[in-house]
Amino acid sequence: MWAKLVKDGDLPPLKERLPDKPLVIEPVEGPGVYGGTWHTALLGVADAVWMDRTIGYEGLLRWSPDFTKIIPNVAESYESSADGTTHTFHLRPGMKWSDGEPFTADDIVFYQNDVVNNREITPIEAKNPSVAEKVDDHTVRFVFERPEGLCIKKHASSSGTFVRFPKHYLQQFHKSYNPDVDALVEEAGADDWVELFGTKACIGLGAGETYMNPECPTVYAWRTITALGDGQRAIVERNPYYWKVDTEGRQLPYIDRVNYEILGDAEVMLLKAMNGEIDMQNRTIGKPRNKPVLAKNRQNGDYRFFETVPTSMNTTVIALNLTHKDPAKREIFNQRDFRVGLSHAINRQEIIDVVFQRQGEPWQTSPRKESLFYDERLATQYLEYDPALADRILDKTGYTERDSAGFRLGPDGRRISAQITFVTSWTPQWADVADLLKSYWKKVGVDISPQAQDRSLWLERSEANDFDISMWEGELGYDADVLLRPMWYLPLDGTITPGPLWREWYHSRGASGEKPPELVARTLEIYDQIQVTPGEADQHALMKEILEINAEMFNVIGISLPANNYGVVKNNFRNVPASMRDSVTCLTPGLTRPEQYFIE
Image (tube, rainbow, N blue to C red):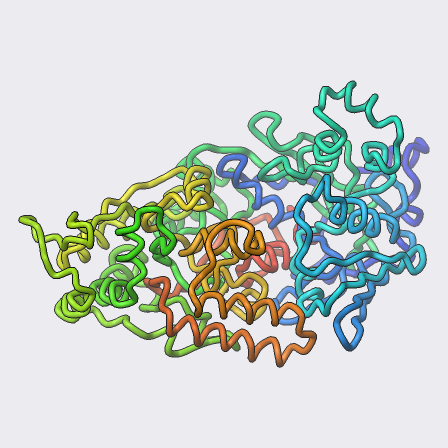
């Protein structure tokens, strides 16, 4: 691809484009051939996380392909102080950005000190602030006010955040470096320098922001050619200065381009996969209900399956809004016996058989069995399907009076009813789950109305504390997942939580939202302690304490443990492992090193 440019003198020869010690990648099947386009798809622009998962897993560190240990990536090596307050990274001498400019410690320092620590660009200060110090051109040290126990794990789980801010390009849009930045602001029609910087640095632009400015140099294997949001596809092309090679010393990636077609319908994506128009993908396509039809079309579509082993711990988590705006619903939802009664009213085995292709087993919201954080009580309590028992437990809440249709009356004298919301574009089966829940809970006197929502609306209402009951996947149920993003065990995450006002209180440090009850507050205190604890064994002990408290609270209800899943890959698309861990922490399939995929 670059031969003519090198011959014409428009691009340096390979030796001058690679770092002194390029990272050597051992291909899964063997060395590949160059060329071709990887055809894949997004379910709307908001689905751009698939771009991060495929081409954006390029942090300073990363997880090994089997998701068992942290290994070097952009950084050649690293070390941490015994007290966890400093973390030092050694970069690769000679490494370059996609425009040929050197990648050095200055770029990391610029991002930390001039972007993260700039209150105009980043208004909210981190709970444990840090500064980056340049030790030399290829060594950077992060110094924290207090121990940062999860620092290394966070870097290994980053989608390249610390390595996508080239100082030589972005400093022209930063007022600390360019006193004439206002002229650029006026020329661009921006409101101020912060807006201009955000546009050029691709921050604050929404989903897929990383891929919205083709002018911004990158260290990823592919660089943006057609920006996400500009039409019906995003296209990335091989980076001529990419810093990894195969075992024969040939520069990666093998594939010339990746074409992300933007579709508005999951069924259209499924049809494209069946027709062999998608080269490799598991996201959106790899749903249990799609597998039979995909299996029948394998020969016509010329594709095969690969296995994904989930780190998720539940197909469906049911979150009642425990900080509901309606005082009556809040009172009802916050009664533990009410949640326990609803749990016993669910016929999980029927849901597994009817909705999830008889795969999985009844499960609450505990980490998976193979996780070191597995909690048997949390995983197995209140799973028994027993409507009579459910009725007796619900009677203990005091809501024994019923209306003429048999539904219980709440403390305000009105029928206990709630809307249960879900995103079918994410998991189509949730509509069927919700219908079954409606029938189960009707038997015990609770009225629910299922409603599918667009993902953006669903997220907006979740963040605004504007929902009754919501369903989402029980993500993050395995080892590092649980430590880094324990979204179901304390009100921390932005996606969904049973207590949005508690989450707001935590992140605003008490300035807004609502102080959580004692046990919830205790989980937040413990998690704060985890983050300043350098010892891994101590971190694990504290996390297990959080899970024990969760078993006592029983704030959310689970349905079933996910079984192994799958993706589709064309038969001429090689070096894709037959099986891979599926996690948002290691950005599957990014952990399998897509730069070594090739097309025969």
